[in-house]
Length: 22
Image (cartoon, rainbow, N blue to C red; front, side, top):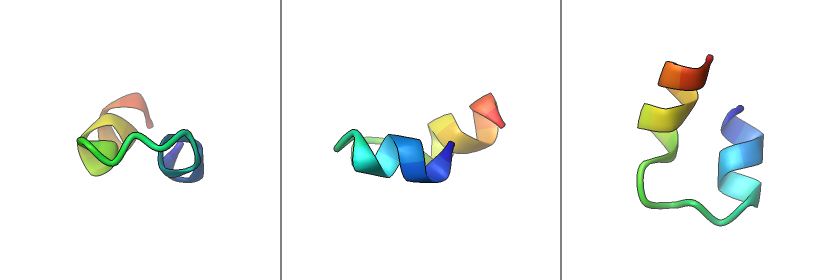
């Protein structure tokens, strides 16, 4: 999820979304 968020260019809250969607 981390790579996906970052790769998508979502630098807004990648960690938050990653941890939540993990």
